[in-house]
Image (cartoon, rainbow, N blue to C red; front, top):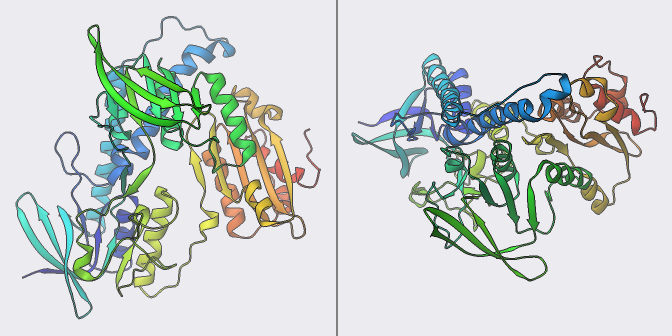
Length: 480
């Protein structure tokens, strides 16, 4: 006889495990299906984010930043360091231990909240009288489970380019790039977006000569133009090399001397044929929804032309009781966006009426300096014909930033010219991922720039720059 649950979640990434926990908190009998297997062979919760995405990449970013600080910036503090070296194996082991700690933490939360972990791959079988049957295929066979409410949270996977064989050694996507066993002397990256910049930054700090090939003619097109221009200047100064507006052609591996290399043939923005030779290549051209093998057609569902599952503003599919959240639905592929949707769906199943303002979801790029924004950028406001005011303040005028030897960047506040409501905040700085939270809270409560300007901020702190930028929308900045 099939096991029967109130809520069945397919996928245990940030969207799925948060949905499971919130549903259990609300008193539902919950099961979550997950098949992810760690490199050591153990089944693991957490999905792409915890296992090969957000968490391990940030661990490597922190390690590489520490190494570069010791190598390049310790002298500014009067600290002399001789012969600093990086132990790649130890750095990777640290990264893996953090991942294990986090995934084991989710297992504890599942036990604490009495959530059943069904270990295997889930796919729909049938729908009958408002209940859905799902087959779970695991190592020891398969079983059928039933639930009146099903939440699809199967995440996304790296998009690969036709004709480029990703072997996770010479040619990698984000997974392979987290596990290089040595620092490649020459690293090529196809794609200068979020993941390409973050992973390229890791290996540049550790000694790679990094070249990024980007198909778009503009750099970080989703950012406010002033931020993307500043970022391009700073990243170029750091040593990253960019070729924008390129067309990627043949990519092949060959042996030169005693080592294998990768050749990337491309056409540059001037129309000239070029070849990039590198020791390793990262393919970082976005992500696609992971909906393979769900058998959606068994219950009358289908993806759109891009592979996303269509949902309404409450993340419900066309079927009553079936929801989809996170990277498999419209909107940005952000872990915290998926978490918010997981809470929203669990609470709607419980009869509550939560709401998500997608305009108030912050974005972050974990380079150094970090880039973060929430709301609209200046290009979007101009295109919409919105009358707005701008306030901008640099970190070079902030005592805390100078003390940290992190004077690069600024905060930019965009506010409605008539009502003063904050329309967008854009930050490039050390700690931008933390600073943007204040802006997100302000926008959720429809605050004005004057509201931020009137709030006392600790001195000295990086957060003072937020206040100064808010003051600057009315030409009232106090420290410049």
